[in-house]
Image 1 (cartoon, rainbow, N blue to C red):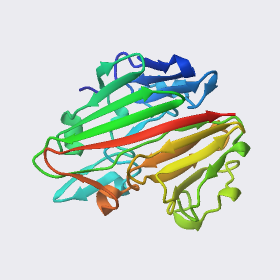
Image 2 (image 1 turned 180 degrees about the horizontal axis):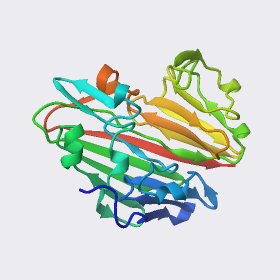
Image 3 (image 1 turned 135 degrees about the horizontal axis):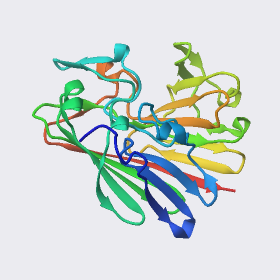
Image 4 (image 1 turned 135 degrees about the vertical axis):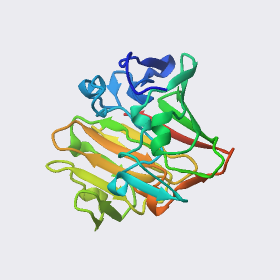
Length: 284
C-alpha cells in the first residue's frame, strides 16, 4: 500500500436519512472521518486546506492513531528486543487505506503493512476499521489482527476535532482532579469549572477520569458523548487559541507507551482484538 497520493480528495459518504446524520470518510487520507454532521450542524471541524495538502497532517476531522497515540520520547521506541522510530501518533493517519466493504450507512477500511511501516514497526498486522451511522451517532469498530510470529504491542486512538463557535460554552463532564499539562510538562490539579480555552494552548491529559465515557457540551444546545468501549480510555483535551475547535481524544494508552509499557495492548501471535468507539450527539 502506498503513501497518500492520487485521489487525495476522495471521500465516501454514509448516512442515516431518518436522523439526518451524515459522515464522510477519506480512505486515502489516513482512513479518517472528515465530516460528521447532524442536520445542518457540523460536529467535526475541518481545515480543508490542510486536508488537500499531502505534505501536512490534517487539522480537523478525526485522524486515526495507530500503532502509538501521542509522542514517543525522541520519536523512538524499544521493546521486547526490538526498536524503531515512529512520529507522533503513528503512521496510520498518513497511509492510504483500502475499501473492503461499503453500504449506504457503513464502510469498512483496511490497513496492512508495507516496506515503510515494517521499517519503523516490524510486525505484520491487519487493521479493519468500520464506520457506521445509526441515529445521531457515529459508531466505529477497529479489528486488529497480529499476523506475526511474536507478540505485537500497540496503542490505538482517535484525534477528533469538535467544531465550537464559542469556546466559552464548552463544558466537560468529568470528576477528574488531576491532569498532566503537556505544555508545561508537569502534573497539575484539574477543575473542569475553571477550564479556560481562550488565550493559550490547552493540552491536558486527564489522569483520573475513571469512566469509559466522556461527555461535553458545545455552543449551548449540543451535547456529545464519546463511548470508549469496554476499555477505559486515556483522555486528552487539546485546543489552540483563535481556532474554532476543541479536541477530546480517546486513546487506549498514554503517549510513549511503546517505551514505558503503560496500558499498552499486547496481542499474541495469530490473535485478533476488537475495539469499539461511539460519538453520540444530542441537540436541544
